[in-house]
Every structure is written in structure tokens, then in C-alpha cells.
Image (cartoon, rainbow, N blue to C red; front, side, top):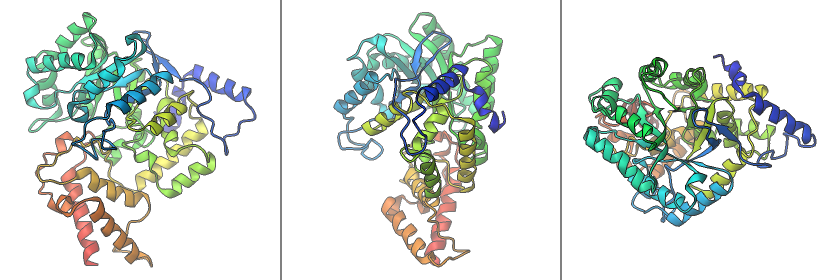
Length: 463
């Protein structure tokens, strides 16, 4: 699909609703006025079950902890259950009914916390999505995988899962390519057939997978769907306005969202969207882009452009957001209450923004921390975060082309690096063991990027 054809996939009903809204409120201008949060939540219907699913889905990956922040900042602090309860209550009160978790999230504690928060409400009021996150070979056995599923039901305090995903399809494993890993996790042990049996028993209402990595595995699973070998009720993909056309150019092992979406849409398979902000990257844009967005809609948060883009295509069932803080939840609820679909002119604007972001050549890290812990102590996400931040803010000193403010930028970069990442956890300590690479959903060649950053830092120190 050509990038200009994006709007062709906007549902007719959404277009009609958007036009009707515009006709009813002619006094509302897109310039200088916050247009969102004036109505109720937008819902999409699952064609398989008739579920009316909120367009905003609650990702339970980065729950708040008692010490403040999330486990990323305070890994030893327990989840703040009272705050999780409050946020879940607010979400349900404002129409959010899809909650996505995993046995792997929050150091294995997300399902338990999610179960406590949701079980305080009638089961009919929400949909639970969780995953079979059997990433490492010890959990590949039939018994271990079955126990993982049974434990998910226990922790979530339910006797059925609404949406069950094979987690991280397309990812390789240590010493194995993506196909070998997939077969080891789901086929050789017969677990995929067992999950189909659980669906027939009503313990799983919708069976799907989340895709990361090797597109050949994605294509294989859709071929099985076409042949009737396995039926996928939904598929979770990464989709945002940067990945729409640039995912495989940023990293050759990723797949453009336009391809993934098209393959699902033509089969009428509902798409669940992850990474609408690309790990927060599209919420902290370069200043010159932020300025242009604010000129168009001064009161609209920058992140809202990305959420509107992700929610616009026809066939998108829900858009996940890992909302750690109440203010993020409030903003995102407003974005989809109701959705203002992206117009053709706005789509053209966002494609220009994507061009500009791509040309910045930053590292496509989403700070998911799947690469952690590093056996040699590196803080991989923090290293990438500092490097990307300086690129995005236009504060990268160039030793080859020194401007009048070179010394100021050089000093700021090096001091900021030391403050953001302790010296013993910086890129210079990477030995290239490659243990992190197979765990990265973005399939970043982490050791190569560490070497590049370290060489750049050393060049700055010498200049």
C-alpha cells in the first residue's frame, strides 16, 4: 500500500461520524482548541465474537511501584496496588474494557496485580488479554507451558481468557533461528494444538499471536490461516506513523507496518496495535517538529497525533498503551472519546514528520528492557536513551564539522552521559557477547551500536 492510501482503510462509519461531528459543531476550530474528550469512548467490534472493544487498550506492562515510577526505575520496589486499582477503576468508568498483560511483565507480577484490580468489578465488564510467554527453553516443555497458562488463570482470578496470544512470534532464541524457536515453543511440544483444545472448551475465547521479528514466520502463520490449518482470531502488531514505511529501513530485520496491516486487513483479521508511540519516542519529538504540531493544534499533546494515527485504520480492534501514570490514562481516554480519525491532509503531514525522524538516524530502541539484565552490567536502554535524546533535541556535537557551539555541545553530551549512565555501565564495557540480541523485539544489533556509541564518545573526549 502506498503511504497516501492509508486513509482508504478508514471505516466509512468513522468518516460519517467525523463529518457529522464537524457539522454539529462548526464553531470548533482545530487551531487553538482542544477537540478531544468531548464524548464517549470509541469502540470496535470483533467480527469473530461480537465483542465491543474499547479503541484504547490498557497495557499492564509498566505498572507503578510504591517507591515511585515503575520497576524500570525501581526494580526492587513492589507494585503500588492501590494506585493500580485507582487507575483501573478510572479506565473502566471511562469506557476502557481491554486489559493486556503477560506472565513476563513487571518481573512476573503483572498478572497478579491485574487480577486483583479487575476482580473487584463484574467479569462481564472487561476483556482480559494475556500471553503464553514461554521464551526460554526450560519453559518449552509441554508441562511447563501448560502450567504457565493455568497459572495465568489463577493469577488473573478467572476461569477463561478473552484474548490469548502466542508471545513474540518471529523472535529467535539463543543458538536458534526464528523458525526453530517457534517450533520449539509451540509445535514440537504440541502446545498450539492444546491451546486450540482450550479454546474449544471455552477457556480461551480468542486465539492469536503477537509478532516481533522474522516476517517469514508471520507469513507462514497467515498461510496456515488461509489453508484452515489454524484460525487466528486476532494478531498484535507494531504500528505507528514512523514504522508505517520505515521499520525495515531503520532496522532491516523489522517489517513495515503497512505490510503487516494490509496482510491482516485483507483477511479480516482484527489487529491489536502495540507501540503506537514507539516506546515513547513519538511522544518526545525534536523541538522543531513539536513546534509545527503545536502551530496546527496548540492544545493537543504531541503523543495524541500518534494515538490518532494508530486508531484510524479500519480493522484495528484496540490500541495498547502502557499507562503507568494517571495523567497518561486521562489524556489517552480523551484521545479516543471519541476518536478523531486522521484526515488525508494530516496523514500527509505525519508522513513528512516520519521522513524527518528517519533522517535523524537515531537508534530504534523502545526501552522495553527485554535485553536486560546485561551479564556485563551495561544499562543498554539508558545508553540508547541518552544518545537518542541528544539527536532528537538537535544537540549532537560533530567533531568533523565543528560549529561555534561545538565545545558547549560536547561538554553537555559527555556530562549528560555520565549523569544518565554510571561509568561502569556505559558502552565501553560491552564485550560483544551478543546475548542481548536475540531478546530484542526491534532486532537491534546492540553490540554494533554499543561500539559505534563508544567510538563516538572517545572521539569527543579526544577532541
